[in-house]
Length: 211
Image (cartoon, rainbow, N blue to C red; front, side):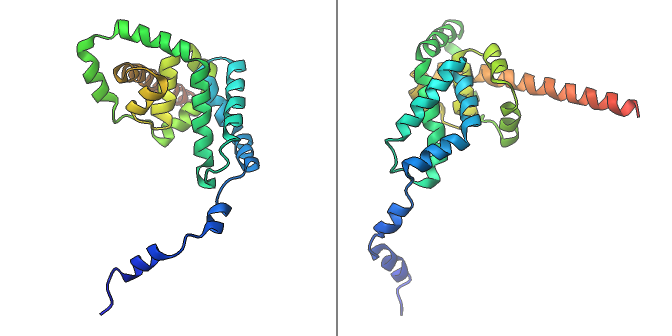
């Protein structure tokens, strides 16, 4: 009788197809093409984090330059990688501003509630519809409404679904402070979405009442 795992074992014993591996890797040209194709989204993300046009543009240049040294990444990963390096470059560009924001949250957030805040936001990320709605907002409106840490947490946790721990590591801010900033961003986004919905409903009501 044939061993039920014989096929699996044969697959594991097959020689590694190096030609197939090489053909699935992205070239520098392909990586730059992704940055060009994703420019609008990457710029929106960078501007939300940095709050400054020139800094946002420079962060994108830095991200593209960094990616030029990583042509060994797989093609399937390129878009995600482009997002990652753009966010990282943007965060680095405004690190001092993010740190200043963190100090304000630390001074205004009661120590006793830190764990409660962390638990509350641990499972809260934006849905695809919520992300699409947020992406229609002018970055300058987000910059005017939220501080650098809250904006960064909104991008990292809300849009890119990074864990609070990963956000804290990248932003170099304690998890409880990141969670508090993210909760603030979620509250603002919820109020913004509700206001937008009320405006649309009002417009629709006005339109229908005149017909």
